[in-house]
Image 1 (tube, rainbow, N blue to C red):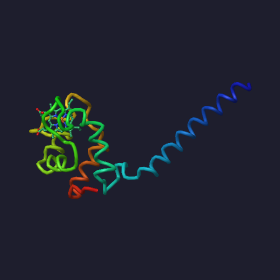
Image 2: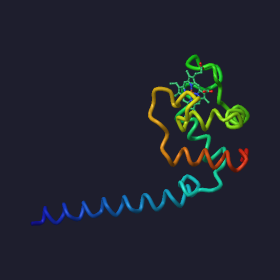
Image 3: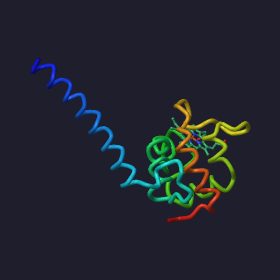
Image 4: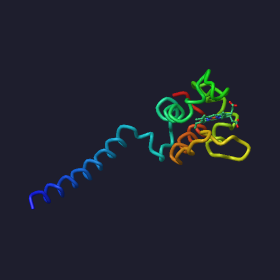
Length: 122
Ligand code: HEC
């Protein structure tokens, strides 16, 4: 009986802690939510590109001759349409990340709003 009570309480504790974890994360990183209308290069866009694209697209990478490292290079890809075309798997573009899973809808929407907002370097 005692053991069962402990089990139930630990179970509830895990659920409650998980709930807190999400609350806190949303407070700390409000712009990472998909509802964000004002993503910044440094805090929202760059982490996505670093995590999913830099393996092949850092300057000097042997895996691709296309560099997306730094604001200016990413801006050029954003302006010529290849950035959005490739991550959305649009026809006429090579689907990216190459041989990897498509980015989440949330991450795609962050990059898309950043481009629609004029590609700010903030
Ligand atoms: C596993 C390696 C790899 C990863 C990861 C990767 N790419 Fe690529 N990407 C390539 C290769 C290879 C090419 C072909 C260009 C070349 O020959 O270097 C390419 C081409 C591109 C191009 C030019 C394509 C065109 O149609 O004009 C863009 C833009 C691009 N990638 C964006 C991205 C983005 C954004 C990510 C991350 C979301 C990404 N890539 C992840 C390997 C990769």
